[in-house]
Length: 533
Image (cartoon, rainbow, N blue to C red; front, top):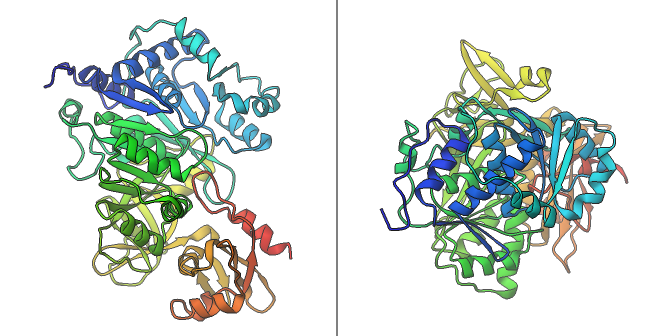
């Protein structure tokens, strides 16, 4: 134990506030968070979270109340989550790109009683608050926020908590309106946050007391190149805070050059990205303004959106000392598995991952696990520590969280099969599957092939109506600046990798492919583009 560390008292439960407080007491002087020149130690972050919790309590916030976090990345986001956990309240992630109508839906569906808001979102917030009588207060980050904390108590005098306290993450998915996934905090601690094993190499702890023992002796610097309003950003940030790491946050929209510069200046050891939408700009910035000193970086994780083989190989080539780990999971499941690519390795053109023990693929017809090597297509499913369901959505909960032979499962929308070696080969989302002449085409499979074309910067694939085949495959493409692309070129390029019925029969070029802040394809937008001609 170093001079800056204290003995620490183990947490009483796997409640997220209990875990945080135990870690903060053990390493009070270690740097917990960095953002835009501001640095907070664990002790400082703990005190500020206490002050915010007391301020919210004075506004009437109590157990199970939902608080909206209408914020971009910043230390205030971490403070707000921790403050809510301390009160047994529930922080609700808000997509800051939503327009007024979408915000109103989310605020109403989530039953928000208060909201923390970034100053630049104030006008948009004002458009919706008048029609939400239960939304009692808002607090703007900046002078108002600092004044609120300054006038509140720093004491840690909150009531007892438990692992049964709720954690909710809203997910927009690729289709439909956002849904709130409701977890027990104890289950989220293991399934989402790693169970005090952020690298998922040691295995989770068995008791709360072991959490203190898992705090790393050396400081690991972690950079989530993902918004904290997305599950991937929250889960990884919390997992490294609970392990005693330093979390470095970048404010505002993605700035690829700033990412590489931050890796250099903060000596970042690990970072997470969100698939192609983040990796492509990172590669572009490196080519245009690199190389950069990334000798401190030993791991790059990706999750939340697909990472195509070509970009994965390019990233490995740029940062040969770092392993690229392509994770798989969802807001409804937590982490389910990963694919790891080391320097010199060549990825396959398929999306495969090694599943964690409680993940499998279930045959829709028999509700039994798919036999490895059978080529039977089923749905990726998870048992064990899974959510309670969706907030305010009993019908959707019954459809997604099911029981077969006394075992409760969460059925994802991801279609897959199991290879002879036990790896899971992902095919795509069943909800966006294209049916062309009776054959099923999964857009993600086609997108991965088309993206490898040197003239393609980004692509989304959808099905459009066809009199003969019912649907035909259409590609909406954003080309690399200065390049053009024809349908014949795309078809010829795909012919060696895809069956004929999977090859795009229509091509639409756009200035920019629309994606969510989490990098997910916007298939509703793509269908509008394809059907507008």
